[in-house]
Length: 346
Ligand code: NAD
Ligand code: WQD
Image (cartoon, rainbow, N blue to C red; front, side, top):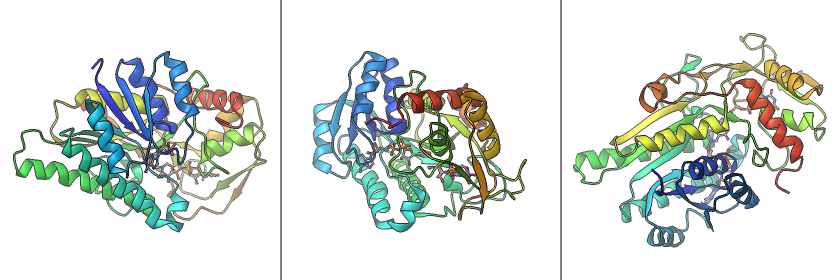
């Protein structure tokens, strides 16, 4: 609702910055807390440029209880969108303590302070990775949240469990101001704001497909390694459900609308409900950018699965949300961001 204050943790990051744009455009007041461990404050300057509105930025860590308390003392926060977290799968296998410390402990500090201030509405950035490796390729929310294959994914599953317990405790005690918690399980967010001013700005060599392909297209990287050509998929390469980041953050706005009328903890998939293979992504990039994407098919990447995509029907039914952008929009917007900002925010 217009004028309500939303605390956006990790708001300077890729998805958080796009959420700030949508929130400001829907007339919310935005307070960002970010420690800039994986982002630059320039993203927020650009958010203000896109929207011609200002937001409040506090550079701090969500594990800093005093900093969080100061925010809740100064601002009458309606709800929290919780994006802050570390997200690199490979890195999490090498630095598990850092991942659990940042993601799980960070969420504990955040929810502890929220509870102290009676602010008990939160939308959490979860991931399809919490489903682990189920026996199906189409994931619906009733699948067990079990078997994530790496510390990053396990940290998301643990946080989901913690948040469910908070809601359960309020049910047991018949609390007068119960937790309202929405877990949004993202599939593969890609794309950028249509202005080309904000987008994904990974540090170093990208791990994920789309940033890698776009850096090949812009000439920063020589060729793409396609991880596996012998999966039981349409063309042997991995299939994923790619979702435009603006569609994704619009899902958060619809989740925000539903707060106030739900109680407890609810999980929703945010995905398009359709998968594309790596070769289909390469073809789309070549078509949209006019560049050739050199690639080589190499061995499978450890921990990858063949195929997955969302069953997004629950979000349509209960949040009146579905994706609107098509693959060509995702690639064109990625390319606009990448070609206008070949070195990201630097
Ligand atoms: P990102 O790294 O661009 O953004 C995360 C932001 O959080 C960064 O700005 C970082 O500086 C900040 N941050 C991290 N730890 C912090 C801390 N302790 N205190 C304060 N700020 C902190 O990542 P993103 O792609 O925008 O992802 C946002 C959220 O969505 C993450 O929780 C991520 O796990 C989740 N998610 C992302 C994807 C994806 O593919 N991008 C998929 C599923 C879920
Ligand atoms: C997509 C496809 C690869 C890079 C990851 C996380 C997941 C979620 C989203 C946060 C796969 C192939 C990739 C490359 C390739 N993040 N690929 N060459 O693995 O589906 O999901 O990001 O929650 O938790 O695991 O995304 O973009 O890495 O890979 O061939 O250089 O592209 O094998 O089939 P993934 P991705």
